[in-house]
Length: 437
Ligand SMILES: *Cc1c(COP(=O)(O)O)cnc(C)c1O
Image 1 (cartoon, rainbow, N blue to C red):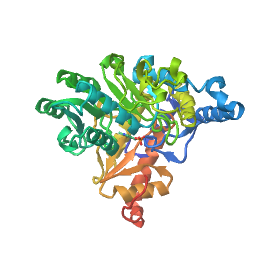
Image 2: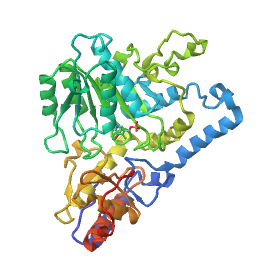
Image 3: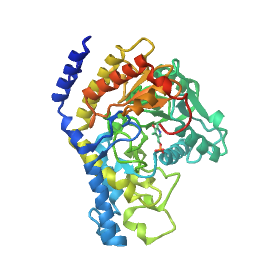
Image 4: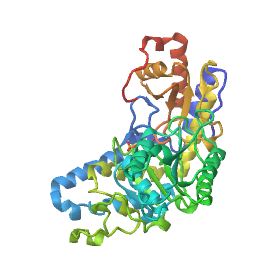
């Protein structure tokens, strides 16, 4: 897909953006979404599609019609709902059918998988190991990942500060494979756990290289795909990734607080889940109600309690949209949109900078625009129906979600930003306070 040229003349610029939209093979997908304003926050909460709404409505209707019998008689039945969605998701992350489960939240899935793999690296129990190693993370992580890992270390009677290896960023935006390699060499790491894409800078890490490095140093390799699932293709099985987690409410558009996803490589399929629950029991005998836990074959064993059908149902329809568009075409458009955005930031005054990697191969689905007034500029954009978000200390995050945004939308973001800055309209807004952005 062609990235529109950024002409010095504003009219020519607009013509090029419109032409790129006209040539976009995914343009018609936008009609299936309700998109409020110029929406560039799909990496925080994706938009609603008619497909997701229909599959949610269907679950509600089936509840009305079948009540408890819906577990077996609904179409599709609720008892195997999670397994079915896992199979549907598998191609998006490059997994085999039984390597993916939908369950819980990203944070809960980090708890169970970190604990499972950390114990596995320590002969089944890090609490009893003479000398347990560390979990490798980095100082740019999304905070919940650290909260969960620290809590699991504490549960094993370990000091989290002594059992985390924190890779430090040199520039506050990115980390290098060399820094990870050094950390692996200098520490006894049991589990490497890194994001695929950084939530702030948008750096896309090299999962293949990092997985190989972890394995060379005797560590398991796990990844948080929250900012790449649905916008960047993955080959988790073939790359030998041990485990992964992600959410479905960002680029996968399954709605606020939608059920999350996880991957466990089939070579680790015999591990005992750290946070076991009856929904992870072997399906065939689950209702025999034995007190002895027999884990399901595959990733389904990491489910804990009853699948929240109403938080899972929108994912069914949302996945149809993504699968129909095709993850490779989605990535191709995403690269063109973010390349265009990076080019356009170059036309803004010098106080604006791109805080994301320039090379598309190292960038996920969004671009970080850095500016000392980022917070107030974000507020001014939102007041003009341009929905972006602020991440401290100085980042305006702009995520052109490929299924429902186009090149002209990207141009609108930058032209609105230019107008706000030139007229100093952002100065009407108060300096930063709390809240969800
Ligand atoms: C969005 C996000 C989460 C969200 O976790 P929840 O349990 O869904 O609240 C976790 N990790 C990363 C890296 C994220 O970007």
